[in-house]
Image (cartoon, rainbow, N blue to C red):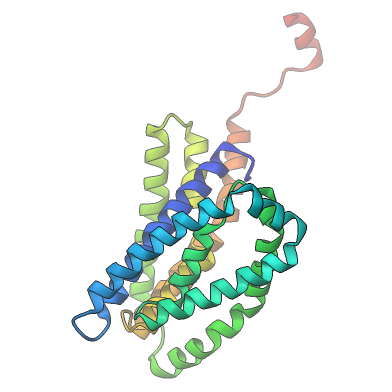
Length: 257
């Protein structure tokens, strides 16, 4: 659905939401860092990271960078991976989550350049293979430290998440001139949390902002809301097909002509 208007609206909105969410997480982790300098350190890293992302994107959009990326994509992929690791290490050494440093590097990549698709895909594929390793330590620690999933909190968080995402996406899309079906599709796709939400929860739990019980409850919410996406989109398509007027038969078409 990336070629549809609803898909493009959803992707653009999700990117903006993720950018704001990462900034807020960095601030919260900076506040939660022991010592009086946590807030100022977070603010400094945020400002420097924003400036670096802006400057980096301009440099990567130059013709020289585009030619280099098109000619040696494997070399660009290696350099990109090294930059991600280095930025993550710098962010974590300054009291923020390592994921924020990698996120800043991701913001540098020009979104409308076809030459960057190959190296980014290679780095992303490697990252997907390493995702299970990322969660193993936290998963073992949570299951041994928690007394189970607080189901009441999980249900409440899921209901509030669905109402806010689907309801908010639908309402704003309608205000923007979209039809009911398209607005509902946007809301359903925005309701998808996916891996990004889980990584955010992981960062908050590692920083001590979330308890193990709250982490598990929000993890259930992320999985449930993501699993709802496919069935809800199929239901919208079926309902729209059922509400559409039946196509005229061949004899009726001739008569109408």
